[in-house]
Length: 204
Image 1 (cartoon, one colour):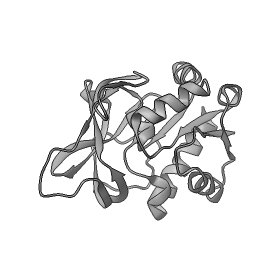
Image 2 (cartoon, one colour):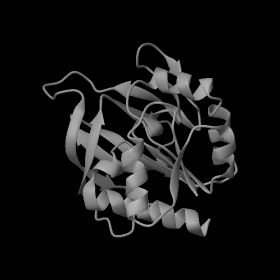
Image 3 (cartoon, helix red, strand yellow):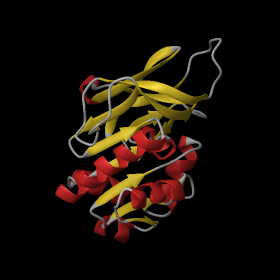
Image 4 (cartoon, rainbow, N blue to C red):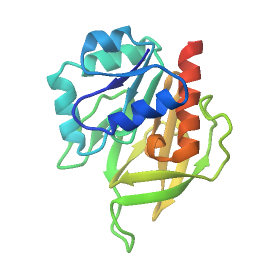
């Protein structure tokens, strides 16, 4: 079973429907025991970094997520679910993250481009993760965000996107896959990512 973590912020039903559409059992959960029992974990999210950390902490899921990642359990972070993996965010002042990866979450610099970055954009694949079967370089995915991650370890960067700046749009290290874009909103290619993650979980 793939656990989709519910902490009050995220497009959970779309993610759940996406996994079911490609043939994988995914269930929305909100307790540490369910996270511990799951074969794979998905952390979706939209909204503010600080609210996400508070909500995860309030329902005692921060330690469960960190523990599961440490045990090698397959993990997929989506949008805010990518950002909270890092050390801290500058959104609404400095807020500490889960610190799975060293690095910061920063706002897009002022430019003529609108923020949030919203809509379809291309992904340049730097390192192809095993969940990316059948997805070509420069494929289009759907983004909605005002902040992006700056990893200290550049080796975890798996994909980048240009929006005024060239930013990290996807990271991958061992069992952890996380992306700034929304696969559940990215039509056929997004479903391929969910299927790829489901197959990775099945083999784990």
